[in-house]
Length: 214
Image 1: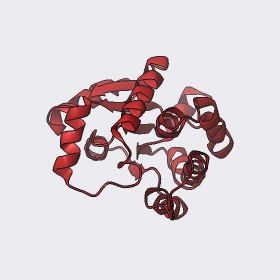
Image 2: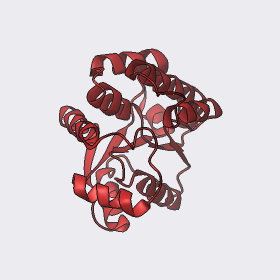
Image 3: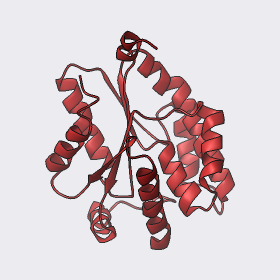
């Protein structure tokens, strides 16, 4: 593809990290900063972002009966993502818009593949089939100590969903999986200290995206 073609395509930024890391807040701040630069921005989330994916989100976060076995959970996430990619993310990128997504495939790799024990190969195979292997231009991985994230969740006071409410050992395994993914792909991930004021964290994120910004 020519340089002009690459210039016309939008950029895709995914925020990842454990529960309470501040992904939604930082996604909003980044969107505001990009719009201030005159860039068109779409803010979305996973699971969700489209009517079909939002319907699947409800099934995942408030599951019927005893909940989904790991394989079914991974399939549902992949189905939601396939709809999201086809109907929102790829069209927005083709229009030259920046897409900021609260979680993407690396959450499935860390949660279902890592902590859930399904393995990375299974998750990446589902993603290759459902979403043609689409990768963000940069993954912003927000990291903080477990105790600090726990304090944030407690302060939030919201009732935990089916995934947030899993045991501490599960969430430790998620954090370890995210670290492994970032270490294996240092150019694709930007590891950001999630502690400090929202403005301080945002400044770190802008610095980590400097090479992508016009």
